[in-house]
Image 1 (cartoon, rainbow, N blue to C red):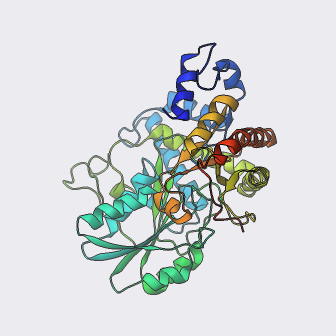
Image 2 (image 1 turned 120 degrees about the vertical axis):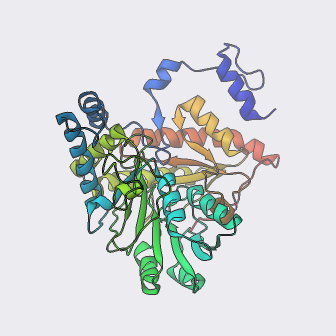
Image 3 (image 1 turned 180 degrees about the vertical axis):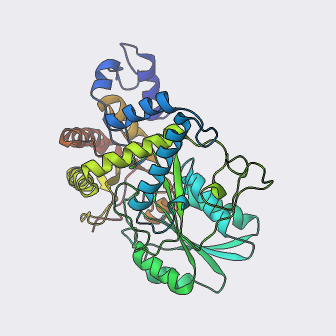
Length: 434
């Protein structure tokens, strides 16, 4: 039985005697909740700023009727918030043209499926990268397995950055789409979108971007970056709830709808509408989710995107520097964190990544994410595909005390790992220390 499983059994039973293997006992639950240190913001930001919760609750309670389906004042007010949110997000993403081309969806994966399946046809060639999330990898692999498209995966350098020249090298006559993950959820690398976009625009190839990790965290300007299609999720750095996301489709680009049905508009017409946003939206929208995005946009504007990013990166530098100095800890990010996300992945000699995550959670109330993070090609690239990594990801509500506790926790865990590593158990090799 693994250390991780024994440990979980010990803490779940609540026995004063604790685990027979190590003697650990379950900490006081209420005390832990008060001291929760949440460092898994790349999965979802938590908690959200209080005013976002307040707006969602009050708006849904007072205006929670079906927008666009009735003409009452409540429905008109609900529709107004939806349209205002489209306008705010269109401007925020640096998109030009009709804000109705900002389309809401369930999440980034939903948007990426719509984009990938909606612009490709049989015989097309698609270029993506080894830095992708499964929300891109799997749709492309399914289309490839069905014999509809061919796919090439652009390589990255040792820092996880894809060169525009690598994209250019892979282009061919039937390349229809280049799709790139803006920011890695594993090592935090940010791709040179403007330069990659210029390569695509020069060859008349569609350029799509997965901005799940970056929308709301780093500036995005679709016009300047030559982006044709952009997918985002709402529950991360845009501070909305889970279950809301969207995409922007540049004018002149059309995406075939994957779902059709009710729109509340032109109900006598027997087919789904061609006009945006209805072209890619059907059924009743996620009103409370859109309200969360609406409040999130106002919160970001109030704080200032540059200020949010500066705060997060200061904490990320402190955290990376702190754990890098600990014997037995391998950090998978460069020492220079310029042009990175506040995401720090690491391993501790002597332990599987899941074991470290369990100890951080149970002993220190520090929440992390362990494993492959739905990005297997990234882990193949960095040689961590078998072990995975432990990931810290910082949000705007974290503070210096959180970071100090995380560093202390890793130091304590690493001390106990030295002896285990000496017995040839899980010794990690640095692959990204420059």
